[in-house]
Amino acid sequence: MRPDVDEQLTGIARILERVVAPAVTDAYAADVLMGVTAVLDGIANGWADVAGFLAWDARETLALVMECSPTHADEARALAAEPPMPLDTRALAEHHTQARALLAQVAPELPEGEHRARVAAHMRARVERYPIRAQARMPGQR
Amino acid sequence: MAVGSERPPWAASGGLPGDVGSPDVNDIVSEIHEDLRAWAVAETGDPDATIEGLVRTSAGFSRENWVFDLVSGPDRAGDRRALIARRDPIGSVLDTDREVETAVLRALEGSAVPVPIVVWSDPQGTRLGRPTLVMERADGVCDWFVLNGDRPLATRVAIAHRLYDRMADIHTFDWRAAGLGAVLEDPGTAAATAAADHWEDQLRRVQLEPEPELELILAWLRAHAPTSAVTTLVHADFKPGNTLLTGDDVTLVLDWETAHLGDPHEDLGWVTNPVRAGEHRIPDAWQPDDLLARWSDRTGIAVDRASVHWWNVLANFKLCVIVLTGTRAFVDGRLDRVHQPPLALARVMLDMIGA
Image (spheres, rainbow over the protein chains, first blue to last red):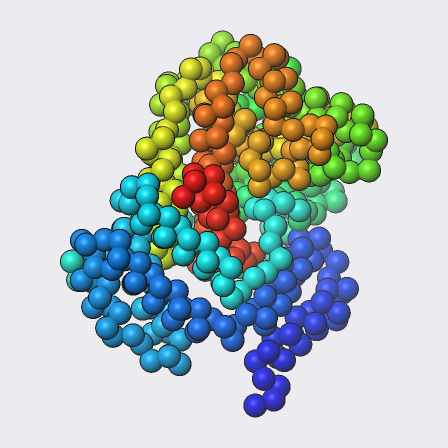
């Protein structure tokens, strides 16, 4: 499958940067184009890891909920018992959202202590593994 | 509760008000040109008023900025005024009120805080289709990173003094005497709780998915909210990038769209946020301790360090919500910029609260 997805995304970003950008004279459009190109680069670098990230994050999240919240443990167990097909990205995303929804209920109720520290440690770990990164500017930053 | 049996808050349906597609750029410029001319004629009474050099600038994420010259008289023989129209966008990273902004700017005219002069105000959006302020376009340079730019260290420190003295002047501005109590709500001692409420409301309105990190942070904010000792005018987005410099002087403080009454520690927390150190600090020469001490001397208000820390956390929570507001607008087709999830900010906040 050539050009593969990586090659197409990277190539489109390159075309926008080398061919289209120099011809764009409108300041606003040029600025937007620069952002679009950066995002395409980020997707090109990370899209292949999205499914793996979703599966890993959902699995870890559900394990944490089972461990930290007696109230939500059964729901987490039920979700964990029926993981989606590993190649079905949409199903993985839905499953991931459901897992995160449980953690969103559990996290604010945790008192300071071991459980909260473990949840926070996972939150930090997922920042490191998040697959899509683009050159970021603060909102409003030029 | 079975998963998905209730509608979660992040699944709030529908786009935000004003959700439309993007028409052709040339049509927009032509339309704005005509509408501005009609507005100018109505405001000035000059049937020959013309609009020249109309251009949308790239500056600003929360507002469309259109710069132009207003020329009066037959055959363009009259005065020429450099103006800027700041129109609400279809999609934004912020949703704010032009009527309030106009009132704040007009109250500050002639005070120690140099602000843009509002020429015309249309908070209802009857002139250009969306709420718009037209202001005098001032000379000066906007430099986000002036404190870490090419100037000598002593000059940069002097600029820092001028910058944050202007912020202190905002906090000593007599908002009651200026009548701002009629248009702005005074949260009293509960400014922190009011801010947490406001940004949680914004979060619920825009979030597209669960945000466990922000839920955890929000719980911490609620559990540790300080009370405020004094109510002042708060700029709420004070930074070098929201000022204009003429030479080494700070000649204008810009972007008042989120100004409100509250605890001055909110601005202190914003400008001492470690995430924004590159904008607000000078290594070994202008650090938060220097800023807070100078601010306290100038305002006569004692600094509460624990409160500053709380507002540091709130500053990052607010930045996260602003990013998510942009994400929502992008997904709804109302914003031309893509923001990735604010993961790094979440990590910073976890560190800040010791989680």
